[in-house]
Image 1: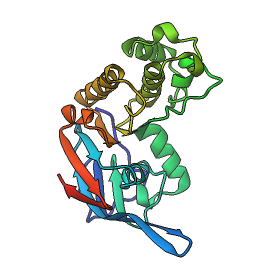
Image 2: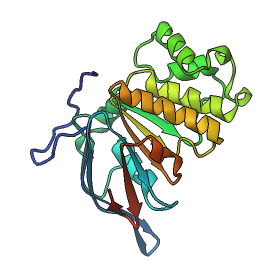
Image 3: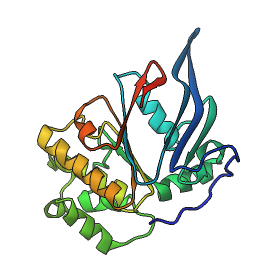
Image 4: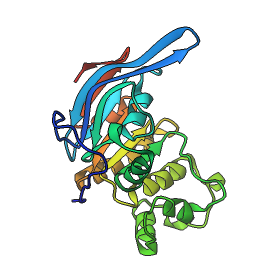
Length: 232
């Protein structure tokens, strides 16, 4: 099990789960209009859980994931992830928290186009470990593509490379935003299976998606509608 460290002071009234959202509200001003994608969101995820948050496009799923990863500060409320109160961290603390505790997987892959597969995966490391990279590529079935650049890869190979980059530093939590949105059913099942394997090894996985295929892998399904969790 990965050792956890404190990056930000944790409030006494927060429950210690792997992920804890407490009364999160997010507001954006667009001209004279106030938009609230998240309204008093409260839920928790325990260590080793695989949880998916479902809902239609525009429901606030991605906003919620950005807050969990410390990439967006909420208007109000508190979030604790991997024993770190991310809503109470300095920019430097958040940067360290993300590099050590979080693995991000996105629908659009976000691979560096001028780096090959091997070097894209190395981008996720906090310390250089060539052997770990080679093992990860072999595990995900992309070792034969180690010298290939993203433009030369299929969508499935690009997503497996992105997943390898997210997993290489053994984060406490993987946050995935529509990780199968650009994949065919076969590649989608492979990516979800890899996330499930990571959970079984002790990691915690939070996936936001509007697809139904993820339900077969998740321990729990939460539904986000009009800024609120409406089912658990």
